[in-house]
Image 1: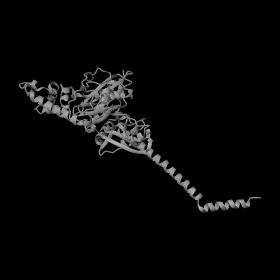
Image 2: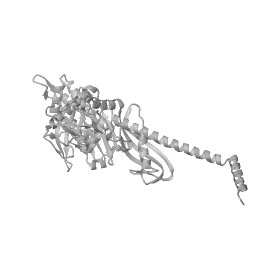
Image 3: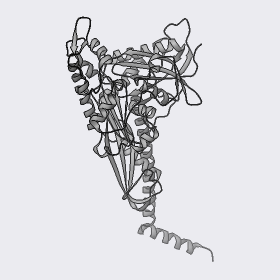
Length: 483
């Protein structure tokens, strides 16, 4: 039976591209209806698209396979944006006001708009996490209604290289797949695995993927820092492969034997680990390689956490992603960071029902795509697929990707939290802003011309010649009036 109501989300990972379809229930739980995974290692590196055509083809394959399983056409999808070039930068926008001016919502929106239109060389602002506002000398979360003479808006701008951002948009345009919303994948992940207490008391979320490790720092329920490190569990595999073996064998050995921390007294110098039926490797050498690379990853993670938050991580460090499954990884993080509170998030906090083995494994590898699925709130189901059409309709008949359709173009201040505007939406918003600006300039010009006409008429009316003419006219009228 064809599904009539569902949400579709796609995660573009460095090793796998994952497509998922699920139905939300009234109680907030999610029933997963279909899951498709495709290898992406040949065209996505460190979370960034490098081959547009191959990525578009993979996206098309995922949508077609989901369509076949659901027996329903897919009209749009939710997408997660991540990758190596993503980073956060603090920005402060200040404004002086007349003495004892009451801050209005318009003042706050103006600060937000000025920040959103800030320009960074070769960088695109994907999202803005508003921090606190400084009203005179006091810090406020909501400054509206407070009297002051100076206000500062503190913002955390999340950036990505423009080239990577355009490549991602181009992939969906080439595949002719409509994007319902783009979300920042790290923020969608954080919302799905962190508790409110952890965000409020302060924590660091560490997502260890295949090619990258993402660090998100939260405090007082706000995102304070975001960075992507170009190191992941795949680097451990490559280091193991340096022991003269294929990467497939190295990956297998990593999953079977790798341990994040081994006490020196527990290492057997005579023990050898089998590579295959003919070759072996020394256990100590294997352990040193694994721990050496993992130590580098942990040190880079710790360096990315701002020093002024070292003593504010009362919620601890939360690990997730495929790389967090390594044995004793929590002990390794405790040793290098001296943070005693370490938790591994194996699964999302939502109630998920599924028959898929990858989801039911609850090993952290599906947390991001499930977080994207949970974010969705627009039905992605279209018409029922014609059983005689094996490919779910002609690809040329699909709507052009990223077409905003009936949605009104968003302004920066209207954008929901963690949503990334597509390139088409940004262009539509710029066009709308241009039209609005031209309309305001036209109205202002007409007012100015009207004011100039009024002043000119007053000047003429008050001129000596005009006054004299009026006096003569008035005098003549009096002389000609009958007695």
